[in-house]
Image (cartoon, rainbow, N blue to C red; front, side, top):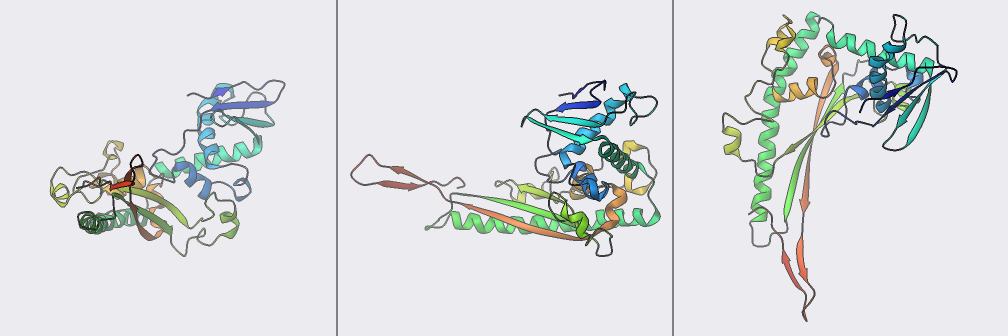
Length: 300
């Protein structure tokens, strides 16, 4: 839904009305809004703008030119504040116009980094990360298949407790220890997750019916596959990062998690967290003299 913008008049304000769209994909807990909030927004503004506000300001930047004299940050009548209205939660929030301007500047700086030329060091770091992730995700996939086999063995045993299960893989990407934001307590205080050192994380769900035969199929698509996930070749950029074969995790990191390729060199650690959910379920019949209980088994 397009936001509603009202040209500032005597009330000296700009009104932005929108439904909160959330992150770009439900499996990703960080997107470009959170990345901008963490690393581009001024520390004094982090408590005044939340990541969802960054999304609204992006819309505002696109629409504000209708009310400007040659600049998207200079309306005909300078407002004293902007009003953000979230229809889904019926929240009306006023933000000082100077804070709005700094937020727009942060978005612009992020966009410039996304389109900036890569240095030799940044190019080498991105290519090295892509190569390492290609091998690492195969190791992670093999581990997940081994866990799945153990769960299947338990489900098919005589004393099976499991009715079903889920396997999720959480990947956290952390900054290098020499990064200025690694131990910046002032910045972390107002970060929405209170951890500036964590650049981003993603949640990878593995289908319970995935088998090794599926993974070995040349057409398999997903974590640890042999496909080329590079969707940047149409950018007409000569840098080898944009022309090389991208593994699945590298694609998810730069295309869905909001991390500019220029910033990949800042990654210093990757943490993998396997989350196994054990599910138990039974049917019960209370109509007879004795309760009848039968276990439910989803995967046989």
